[in-house]
Length: 499
Image 1 (cartoon, one colour):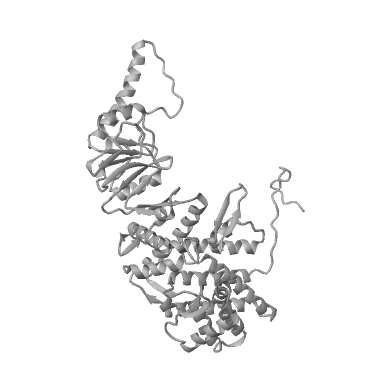
Image 2 (cartoon, rainbow, N blue to C red; image 1 turned 90 degrees about the horizontal axis):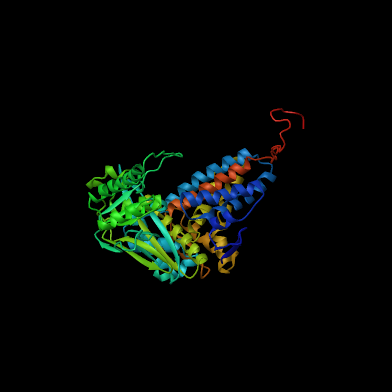
């Protein structure tokens, strides 16, 4: 189910993404703020599993309370939790399988698992293709055997209300929300030569207020002439490298437009810095700070088509058919802004999952199978733990059952009966990959291998680590003290008087 959140400005947010909900709500309790920070960390680190980490951390803290009531010291509990975490990480690695990142069908199954409970689950195939194409486009070798996949900087999502969600696509290039500066300039160019500038194509004005005293009328004409000569010199320097398209992050004066138009060059002005970086990466151009430093090597020739199209009421510039684009634009269409924002959040989760697998090509079974495997194996190992540490160690095992239990409750089935079945299945195979989990739609115990529900190992590892370590942090707190508020008046500043 979706949640509708009303923000103070009167806007609404429709989502069931854990991080998006927690980011919007207002809490006063310091421990609750610490929990919200967990969702943010999980979202930034792996992009998915935000709801899992909150549920898990909450359950571990709930299971810690009986230990404290038994008068077990928090340091002992934390020590047992850390030991259980080390064993849990080992179990996750034992239950994971390697994956071929070039196998499209496996990658699609993986991404569809990520968005299976989200708003875009009915457009699963489309979202999987968008995410997979975008991530593969922006990934490149950074040297030294390292891969770089920067989806935040180089995979831009453009949301344009109108049309249908099925019209969404990944462009093999870049799209800008810009129109040409002069109506007579060319609106379509095949195989354009592109120049990117970080300087203004206007007369250079003084940094501060400048006064000029003129004694003769000719001097005034000379000043105007110098301005024109400077702009002409700039345009001549650009024309010398024979470009078809000039993009600058600053302004383009009317005079510069005139000179560029005469040379049959199209100009775009005030392009965002982030957009210019994407264009540079997609077309092979180099961003130049001064037109007089332009050389043939700075011209981008990797773009196949420059075109300006009108979508809705606005004009958009398309630089597509790039030969080896290492940057892309994902064009999202949909009925309204709220729906587009939710599709954007779901797509970001899907891209994060694909990116995680490229970096860490191992899969863990989903549907609560991994959590149940950890729970059963930790419960078995707890018997070998000596002393009072056995109780908190066992508490971690019990708290991990909250994930399959929640899945069963959401499916409307009986938690006690199904959890017992699932526990029995996992007790039969105490080593290797045991992939029995919960089918969230039918509410049955099924083999995740058959169902094809897999999640990146990185998400499972991060969820368990973050949840256990945050619980350890909060267990170390024995008191909450309000800090002294700053004095509004200037009386007694610098003095440590008795309050």
